[in-house]
Length: 165
Image (cartoon, rainbow, N blue to C red):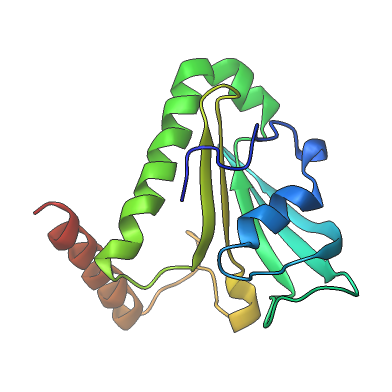
């Protein structure tokens, strides 16, 4: 993880290029060469979550490159304009949280790269696409069994026990 070790980060979704994704994958997948990237899905909220399909180039040397990854960042222009400093501080807090969480040994997506760009007031996280593992994402209005609630509360208690020490 590094503070903008890949140069200026894009602030618009249309500015995302394969070179950024290649740079973010380089540590975990040395020799990554992409012919193309394609945004397959976008979830817009306070920050933007993008599912990015990866098309390796013919000379790709990376072994076990995933078919897709999740790219998360502050690409919401409305939020960036309205929230200004608050928006950037929230993105910075998320960046710092993802730097801490792997050390806690919790069940979470694999983080390939996390970058913070104070100049562009942007954060980018590139992480494992859990949909490739058939993970089911909980929705707030979906019914939960007592066992599901117990597992979630246990995970939250574990997070707090490890991070509040």
